[in-house]
Image (tube, rainbow, N blue to C red; front, side, top):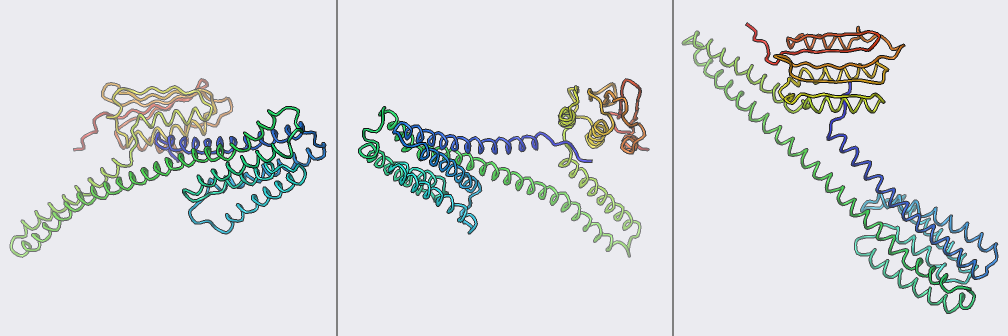
Length: 398
């Protein structure tokens, strides 16, 4: 049986989803800017009186160029310091598409701005080394501004009914590289933060492993040293005082038992999940399955035996998902007198299979019996309920 994800795992999953969503927001923002500039180009050329065939050709070419920038964006997201041949090719052919589209635009319209802008924009999406991108965007902006000035004095001079169209086309075309780089810079910042978060998580895991290793070393080292001393003493006393040697062996065996129990307790401390989190995880799992779930947790459940109740909570939650088929469920864990009482109940679909005799409940009954507790199962037309009662104080074996 697989345990429900804990709070830390859910937070990590949500962080990855948010990170991916942010990337796609960045992509669609850049794609929207490119689509907008294509529409501005077409509107300006329409105002300049170009034939419909030219407008259709440039419109289709603009969409092809826009589509060619998507591989550049995908390559940018998964970029590495060492570019592979496949990544270099994926960056090269979109640039060829941009150059071909620019050449067609210059041939059909005579506009240098339309000829240079697609290539300049595609170059901004290439993963440049640090420091190169800033110089590239400055150079592209200056070059496009010069092309804008040449077009205003040349091909579009006196051909537009409204000069604001040329101003709008020039403004969007010259600022597009800077806006694109700004969006990518924001993504780079998020990548740096994500890398720092991953490094912090790895460091925390390393520190935790070192702490576990230190605890195991201290625990086992102490007991092994004691056992070695007692065995050495036993060897010396065996020929002179057999009774004392036997007592020393008993002490060494006691140290072995203490080491075993200490190791078991140490493993349990790192493996167990707080019962309040177990209840919350179970509730989230049932809610995710479409079951309206209520959860009630007592104020001092951190004192309850997690090693016994944790598996019980997970198994009974799985039992509800597997056999219940209903719409409502309720979980509760609280101290009742001298016992800890855990109960889970749910309504049952009309044709749901009988869950009272399942192997899971039999395993729960054995586990609860070993802890000195009781298992009660109630099943009827109204629903199904499992109640587990475990003594707050473990029984003393005489």
